[in-house]
Length: 229
Image 1 (cartoon, rainbow, N blue to C red):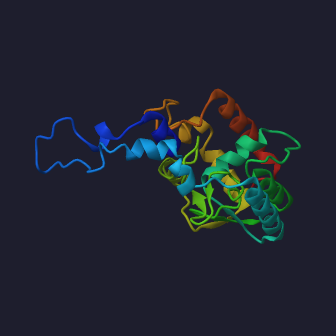
Image 2 (cartoon, one colour):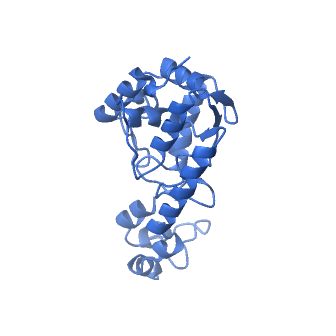
Image 3 (spheres, helix red, strand yellow):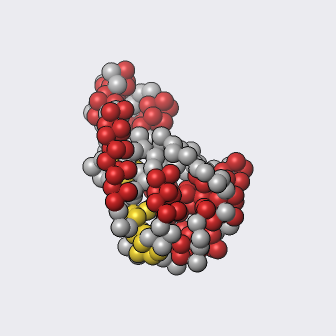
């Protein structure tokens, strides 16, 4: 969000101020024409307020998260990752770890224990903690990115839950969960591309390209390599 803001809005005059103010009820910001906003962009204030996670921080989080997953008696997943796991799997016999997140580690845990309980969560998902967009205080993705913006993600997650008859807080065996998901959701376009594949606004990205669609279909057809119910 902030990257898009600073790349498109270079000065505050026409946003926080008015060329002509016709009503006392519509007061412009006293700093609208001060140049403070432009100076803040130039001095990279947003990066100081919202510093990105360092490689060292992510590496430390990854080590801790992998240990947690290995020792876990249940898996915590946000609903979007029910489908992401199929896109990650792609129908492959031997998926490999990736740096961006912990999809492989969670998948490998489920492959080894197909009936492990999955707790459906709104945040603190076991896949997310090594993502560069992960907010470690809120324990969720709130910073934007191609898929991550909170409102956009919640919209998709609610549709996944509605289609599968589940809700946040439910606990369900992994093999039963993915049987439901793959029975009810045949395509990424149904959820991740709003049923149309059309991006209606810059804020509402689509994650349903032909490539992603094929990945999901292949992972779904393979049942992500586990024995489903």
